[in-house]
Image 1 (tube, rainbow, N blue to C red):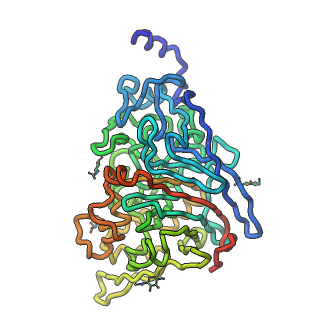
Image 2: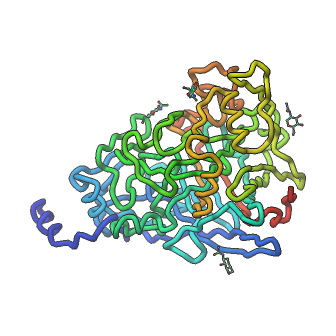
Image 3: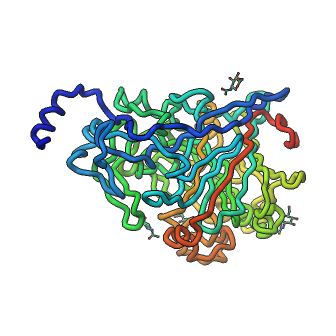
Length: 468
Ligand SMILES: *[C@@H]1O[C@H](CO)[C@@H](O)[C@H](O)[C@H]1NC(C)=O
Ligand SMILES: *[C@@H]1O[C@H](CO)[C@@H](O)[C@H](O)[C@H]1NC(C)=O
Ligand SMILES: *[C@@H]1O[C@H](CO)[C@@H](O)[C@H](O)[C@H]1NC(C)=O
Ligand SMILES: *[C@@H]1O[C@H](CO)[C@@H](O)[C@H](O)[C@H]1NC(C)=O
């Protein structure tokens, strides 16, 4: 068909056709069982696992095969602007195991790092759907008025080296994947993994609320699959678990706007900045960074060569304390205590950053001791995190490498501009030049993470959790 013929036909199409659903590949969600504990028992629930829309084949028309997006660039003829692009382009179904290395078995989810089919796929990000639903994500409220809420899961990080991050977290995405906000433009929804947002206000999303992010898109200079558009998508985020076999951290990140919000320019946050919608740095507890260098790692107190159960307790409503402990080989291991000497600008007496859990006072002391700006507090602190939770947050599980900072912020000295011996700089035993995506993708292609036996409920409602 000639170009003019195509345009004439396009003019006759109803304008409501937008961010279409591709029908070339059937979408069959792998299923995962998980438990909702009640305190007196539990319910075994089965949910679909859905891969994020960004990983999917994006092509012209529902049944077309012409790419709208190839590698890290948009086809500018199909996508002259964001709305037209969304009206022209479809996101297709996914071959979970074959293309993306995502499999489930009973209560276990495995995410492989590099999967080679027609092209290599690097990592993935998946969401938990509500049981029996293809139109709603499961949402979690980790505040509990009468009980302390608890999340527990078993994780195997033995196959994750420096530079990788197996992450399990809550994001305050819209439960409908942003369909309602799109005014009918997003036809794909949770069935196709739409609506992602987090506290980094990522600008690499291809579609936000039914509009393509093609406007002003700049291909990444060092990531053949990614780029950034003018729009970012922000929301509060609770990182329950970010880890590899060397280091782990749990980190709340707040935002001044609750729920998903679209940002442009300075309303998208910048690292370590007080500008913008969200707290990008967060308030992290990483045992190594907090002074115990023999607690978490291969052969250490929490031995990453073996399976572990990770328990995170959200105490209070709104949450005012986030606790952590581990269970390994039937033994309960409390989180390590901070041993960081403190620093108060008005007080020559050295105090210490104390405790083994995250509270607003822990965060303030840690930020002071490390010389970091407390954007966690200025964006609302734990009370705001609790408000986000009470509106319901979506469970995200991912495996990724880091084209921006080589994951050094998790497992190595960071930032590179500071001395590794300065307070708070060194986060694990990985080398300052480790974690480069090119290196890990070629040398650790077989890495993977397994999340299993997910349980959620009031404090003490799971069998191995001590009710402290
Ligand atoms: C889990 O399954 C039970 C029993 O089928 C059901 O009553 C409950 O609503 C489900 N929970 C969720 C969160 O859907
Ligand atoms: C690190 O944690 C372990 C286990 O809690 C403890 O036995 C050890 O004394 C801690 N080391 C330091 C330096 O605090
Ligand atoms: C964040 O900003 C503060 C204050 O400007 C600075 O001292 C600190 O080094 C910065 N931290 C990072 C990780 O860049
Ligand atoms: C990769 O490119 C991004 C810009 O898209 C930049 O922020 C980042 O520092 C680069 N990373 C490396 C390791 O060069």
